Length: 453
Image (cartoon, rainbow, N blue to C red; front, side, top):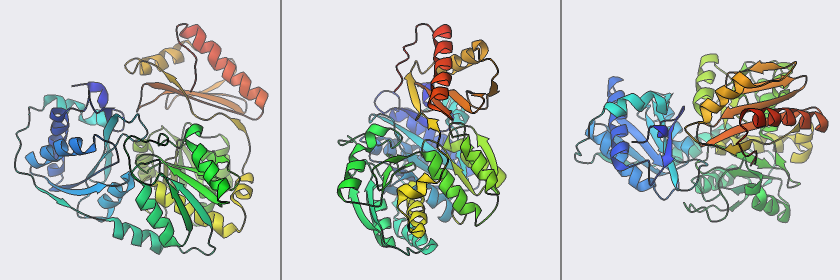
């Protein structure tokens, strides 16, 4: 068993080499035992469009059933449908089989037990100790929660002004759901790459990467649409394109939603270490409490619960609406709210976004490194780095602030990469903070190829 599949906030690995049936069945059994300790006897299971989904689901169901847990099968759904099921259904337990934005041969598990996100690391020792699981008679039932999900979203708001929307699901699991939700809301809706296909033939389903947005941008321009939205493979991350065909920083999406919701209710807003330093300023100026947290849906959800936050957001596109909704990351619901908010302004999306502070910032930048060594590399960097006259935040990797400039280095919890982001008030300052990081990296890791992607 490859221990590296047990990550900080989920389970993830190569479906062909890491996620073998024996391991997945053991995980199902261990989770089943946890469910029974909470006096529950059932669990929801769903999956995205990846080609390995069915085989993993069969092994997972076998483990749950061996632990005497009934499985409610939601079929191919976005991850938010699993979260919705645990909030509104007959059991607060759910597992989503998804590789999210990882390469197509990867897959994994996002886990909720008793309405609480479960870390893969929490399960490692239990799974290691678990003997092989004997298979029993299958006990599962197919369930369709989409009508309830759509009805509840449609009860939340009504569209006052019809606008044209383009949706790009990237051949992931959100295509049919998003198309139906937007049409039922009254938006004029054009959907591309709607049909699920685990080969992802048009582009990879990761809206945080600019190259994956090109088709959406051109479709928005060609159709003179008002807004475009892109979803990741399992529908819990969103990216937005303006009427001018320009991508919108997630920082600005969180700012827009922060202003909107803080007018409804004052409270905390959670954001991750990759977000702009302009975000907490806007939150506090709008009467909210700005709280920085580690990256990861697992961490943001727990912080939202702890602080009873109005909203949470990550620079990667996970947005968690907790006012008059359930506090989980739901790209389809978030996109519908964003479209409604922009529609109500009566202005083009480009004008609405233009109101927010402009800085010079990079997108998320990645360096490919050894998956086993990445965390030790971050620790070594923190020990040996030299940044004169800087302030340091080490809640997740290291965020170095010099005046109004900052740079971040952290280890990805989902893939073999080091993650970076930089922001500054001027282009010159942005270049300076990047150069400082690069010179430190060259000194500390002379063998490292600084080929950012």
